[in-house]
Length: 139
Length: 139
Image 1 (tube, rainbow over the protein chains, first blue to last red):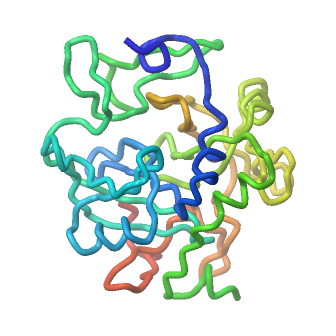
Image 2: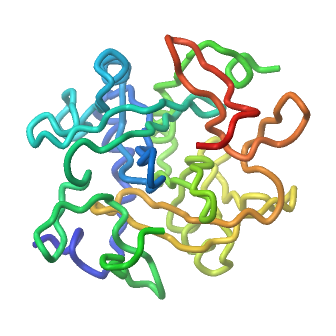
Image 3: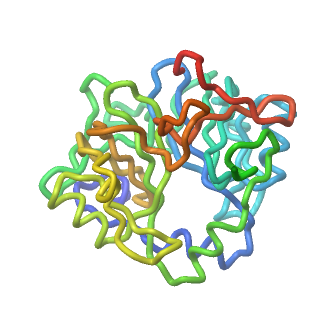
């Protein structure tokens, strides 16, 4: 069990974006939102190749900034994300993928019952601690 | 009129994150979502100082990566964003602010009627072109 993922302590990693820059990855952040429930599921990154693959296949594709390779979400598990719409922000330096989940959740972590979490944002910051939202009605 | 913001051409700026890294800003991306309509409004960045200010005041605060200074959203215009909840992702390298808009829209651009746009994601990518969503029902 990783304390970072299953703990109540806030330990924000402010270095992630600088690590990305050091790899020379030319990426934009991508917010992934459930087109039906409107829950924000994950923030990932895309380069031109990932966007092209997304547009060509209709399946949400990212650039893995840790592995430095194309990351077709759910390619292994079958839990792919079908693209409903792609939005671009004013300054064209980020993307919003509206998606429909084909299989289970989006997060790589599992809840206490062993189920893949639907969203990566399963903890809320209150009084300096992280509180798990599981079992509550999604906002 | 800036073509980047008011045009139909996709001209993604893949260099933004690398520019951020070069300034030595220790920031995480922050997705800002309307707590009521659930629309994604903007992606901005926060360092520890911006998060501390957000927690202390209950008003969404970011770190301006272009001006390298604290950015209290709406401090000038009065269009502040009240924090309803703050979510943290699994790997603790991004944040999700659920907010309630006090004044007008969040975007710095204005629509054809001269109204501040509510969200920065006012264009949809279709067949290689950006289509304006204005006048349509928010998704």
